[in-house]
Length: 510
Image (cartoon, rainbow, N blue to C red; front, side, top):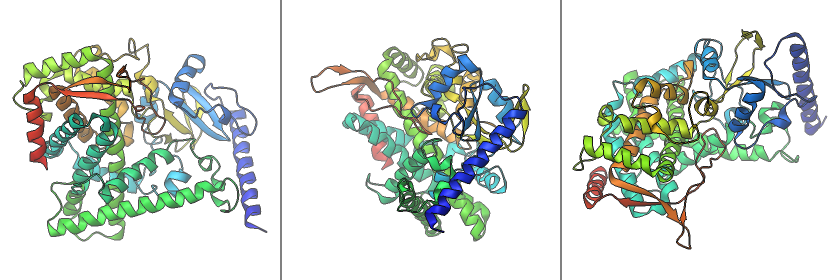
């Protein structure tokens, strides 16, 4: 029998098995409401390719806050309610903390060993514990100085070249994260490890997004022969896997070797993990160290970049917010120094701007999906083992029943109330046992970038070739991390003194 015959038979058997399971289960159990499914493909034809979170949000008025889908036999539940999400993913986290099997991202491309992709188990717990301890409330202040300096470099560079907004933001965020995770200081934008790390995160964003690759729905497609039409994703996966494997191991080896030689910058997360181990790591420990670092890199690079870009877009669109925040910074800090992360407690409106940014932009609109470990019942609905659970964080943060004028950027809605702000961050940074362990660090980076920009710059809309002002269209890309669509900006220093402070901080940091 030929290879392609075996592959075809495997596809048919897999499809029929999923259909059998779906028919058997759905005929016996009460499922949550959802759009009507077709034979064989279920709701696959209704799964939106672009901005699925907005479609799921629209379905809320028809089907309710918990929606059932069947994707070629795979049960999927979309949760539009923060209460239901917390009931399931927080309160029942012992059975809702696994990840779906990711054929493309996890197996073929090679991100499977990273804790973000792991099922809840010993390997996941070990990696996550390393990161959460390294970025604990007690330890994260040791990185504040570097976060503040990199924020100053970012804004200083943008003042010189506002046209490089997107590339500069991603570059500076990449530099600070490599430095803090590995102790590696990239001096040039063309630095090989830096560019490889940024490419690696682009690969993750593409391959981890549910629905981007059919092989995640029909796993047997991974056995397609390379000559068969439709198998091009396998060659793509091979190329991406080479980048992921090489970057992960190169970064780990550089940190290990240069911690021993004293050339790595300290403190750094991976170096601290290895030093606290206190011995030459075993093969298993090396794998955990390597992928704990990669998982943290992935959790910080794209999200911090998107949040910073979203902030600047918001300031262009809402100049009155920009002026009010600047007035607070001037009154509390003055104009003779740059803001520090330690100033946060004294800046309630600026904190409100950060919280509103996380709500308004919703940069991880669906987060990463969870998988149910065993059968469960919620509000009379039966949820089967293996069900993929998607939390529609975007809807939770744009629900008009909770937030008035949810599409508008209104920091005043929080009125400096940290408890209300915490409700946003509790959703943005994940649920239950899969809560982002780098939350404290990410919030510091974002505050440093935002407060430095507000204290020193006027953020204005850019102009087109005709000299006409062009406002951002407030549109976002589709991915695990959602980025603003390209827009133009014009940055001007608020004063000569502000420009001088940025220049001084940038020189000091280099």
